[in-house]
Image (cartoon, rainbow, N blue to C red; front, side, top):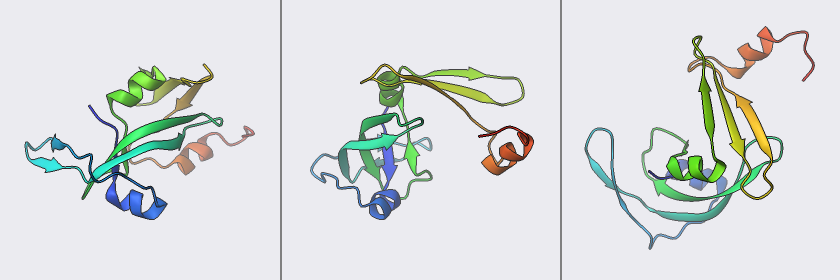
Length: 124
């Protein structure tokens, strides 16, 4: 239901946030945590120069760097195509320019470098 960023990422990237905007968040294990604040209008570059500006809640001890929830899906009109071999194709629309970009994903635990090895012979 939210777009979130880990406190570790905020510190590393020096993203400012407003500590007065906090919310209680129920985690998947049914515990409740309070966010540290809200980072407003964070520029987030996706692909081909597409930049979206996200409102990101800062979370301490997160198991992720960035969590792109429903607000991201709504903003980018995201469409996900799933394939039997585990691949996905993510298609996003830039809300400002209308530019559409499709981003292929790779299976969990498989590095992008392995994907490049498979595509040898093709120019990037």
